[in-house]
Length: 89
Image (tube, rainbow, N blue to C red; front, side, top):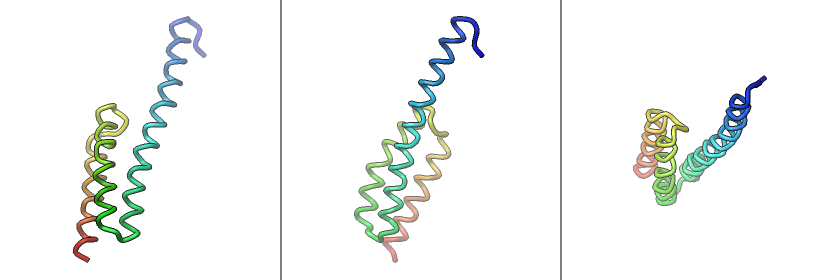
């Protein structure tokens, strides 16, 4: 339990930041799921458009420190590979 005024303030700030970060993380995951849903639906053009829309969001989450750089790079790479496989199929 925080006793000093500065510790109480930090506790308030941490809680506020935790909620904000959770919201951003959820938003990024939603964009990733939208791309995945388009891939599963089998529509190459829509999946490509969804990925193009999701990439800047994903990159901004890296810049904000919400996700690690390599995690987002891995997700983008895998989604792109799935879209390419969809086109060739």
